[in-house]
Amino acid sequence: MVSGMSQSHPRITKAVIPAAGLGTRFLPATKATPKEMLPVVDKPAIQYVVEEAVSAGLDDVLMVTGRNKRPLEDHFDRNYELESALQKKGDADRLAKVQQSSDLATMHYVRQGDPRGLGHAVLCAAPHVGDEPFAVLLGDDLIDPRDLLLQRMIDVQQQYGGSVIALMEVAPEQIHLYGAAAVECTADSDVVKVSGLVEKPDVEDAPSNYAIIGRYVLDPAVFGILRTTEPGRGGEIQLTDALQQLVDTHTPSAAAEGKDGGPVHGVVFKGRRYDTGDRGDYLRAIVRLACEREDLGPDFRTWLRRYVTEEMQQP
Ligand code: G1P
Image 1 (cartoon, rainbow, N blue to C red):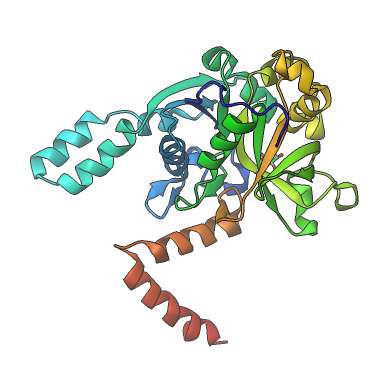
Image 2 (image 1 turned 120 degrees about the horizontal axis):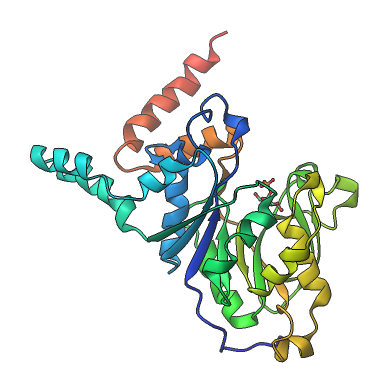
C-alpha cells in the first residue's frame, strides 16, 4: 500500500489550458490566426483539448490567452448570425456543429500579458482555480479521444493525493524536447512515483526516457511555489521546476497535516498522442484521424492507399 493514500481528496472540476504561445513554428499560417485554431481534419486543435477535459468531467475551463487570441473566445461562444442563417436553410447538421463548441463547457479567459513561460501561464490561473486541485492541458498535445489518459490521472490523484503528471517513454534522442522524470515503481503498473524532474535535459543528463506529455493534475500548492520560481531553461518560468520543488519539499508527515502539496506521481501513457505543435506530427495526426473518421475515412483511405502505392513510387 502507498503511504498517504486516502479517498477524501476534493473533487476536480477545473481545467486550465495555456494558449498564449505565438505559434512561430506554423508561420505564416499563424501570423493572424492563433495556432490553437489550426484545423485537425475539420475541427480546431483546441476543441479536441476542451472536449477531452469535458469528457473527463471537467466542464469549467479556463484558457490562459494573450494578444491575437480573440478567435478562441469567438469559437467557444454563440454565433447568432451563422446559427440563424443555417436555421433558415434547415441545415440541422451544420447548425449542430456550430452549436457544439459553444455548448461544451463553461469557458473563462484570463490574459497572460507577459509571456514568461508555462509556469507563469499556470500561475495566471490561480485566482480562478483557488484552493482546489485542477488539471492543466497543453494545447499542442492531442490525446486520442479513445485513450482515457486524463480520467486515469484524476483517479490516480484521488487515490494518491498530491499532483499527477502524464509520462510517456520516448527515444533517448527525443528527450531534450521534453521535461524528463526520474521515477520509482508503485503497486499500480501504470503509475510511478516521481523522484526528480529536469526540463529539456541533454540526453546525457536525462534521468530517464520518461517524458512529460502535456497533461497535469496539480495540487494548488504549486501556485505558492510558482510565485517564487526563478526563470529556468530558456529564461522562462518553468512548470517542471515548480514540480521539482514539490517533490523536494514533500514529506508524508507534512502532507498529512496539509503543509505541503503532497507527492508527485506519473501515469505512464501508452496510448495515441499527437504533437500538433510540430508540423510533421500535425500532418500525421490529420492523416490518421481522417482515416479513422466514419464519414471521410473510407474514401480517404482508398485515395491514400493508391497515392502511396502508385503515385509515390514514381520518380
Ligand atoms: C512543455 C513543458 C515540458 C513538456 C512539454 C510537453 O514544453 O515545459 O516539460 O515535456 O510541454 O509537450 P513546451 O513543449 O511547451 O516547450
